[in-house]
Length: 306
Image (cartoon, one colour):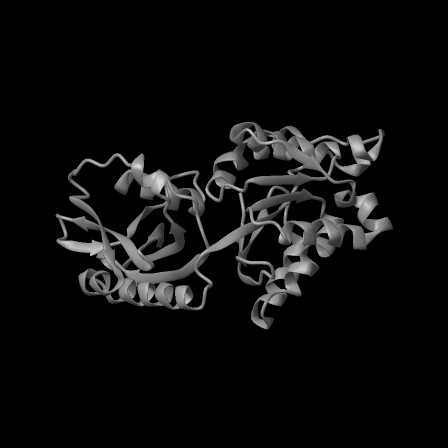
């Protein structure tokens, strides 16, 4: 049996120097990063954000995916911990509410050198050294471009009306609601979608939750992409030139046109993974991590399934 867990390496810059948020557990007399077990019904990105809030009192938005650490715990069970990075804003720190408790006695910011000496476990030190290296390469602070396939829709064979109006099934509507807290873990700021009903219904609950207008782009429809795939590329390239994290909601036939511009900006080891995401299942999404600046590169890619 494998125990699944998730955590976050929270970081900030003070005076141009990196600092990291560590937690001290009195019961084990150890120092580490905020992390915890997957709750029933959760997916790992949700777990990561929830655990940081519960253990440190800080609300975070996930940055790039880091390592997956595996080790054995009591009774020989395997534990698999998925880690993300997160740059913590001063606004989030100002809102922090932490009270020492039976699980977490202290929450402290430490410089890189001090954090490395405090961390109790070798795998955490290795993780931190990798984060420091990513920062030196200017690949730690990134923004997200999320590619979401609409939720489960009425089968084509069962729909006699206009294709653009083919709706979600009840299970698809439930999936759209389920997506809200998962997408909120990444908190995309710009929402762009095909105007067809099944995409609009998929993204509407998250748009309402974060109080953001969904921008419609006809080139993200199946028909628009089939007629002029270059226009679909242009929609993606426009978002690549933006400084904000963003989300695209579209259809399976359009996914190759959406993913190809990302693959072209990625290293070879990520290109196959990106193009393979054209097989996303309904309601699932991919997260491309982009470097900042005018010519962003894709430096990370992860798949999230509901």
